[in-house]
Image (cartoon, rainbow, N blue to C red; front, side):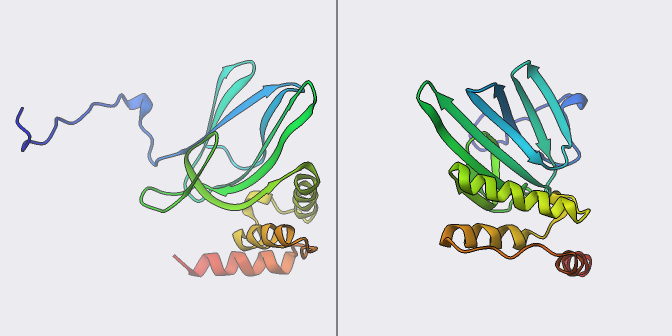
Length: 172
């Protein structure tokens, strides 16, 4: 085939086709050594690789909370939490470990004290009867910025959530 001709189409089996592209999150659980887990999010698919590893998939615009923790013989090596929005093809995104291709990072914290504060904020949202995956992306950005600046964040409220739902219903 010469360089001016298009390459032939690649056949993808029906079982490997998705109606929409997915964001994949690799999860690992080796107790007290490596723990990568999802705190919240609506999985489109989950594939168990073995008893320690799985891959969860998310559709575009899905929001999920991804916690990474690891230790060695001397103690904790990493404590990190990211709240991420899965992106659609053509959207810009940030890369982060164990998430393919990446996503829009709404919140990123390092260190157990900050991770713990985010986990408490998620608990407070869920106490309102709201799934954290449905909370306004602006709230996650607010929480990130306040924690980064060392300030106390505002609590998420039912009124704020209702306003977010109304705004989402009228914007494309």
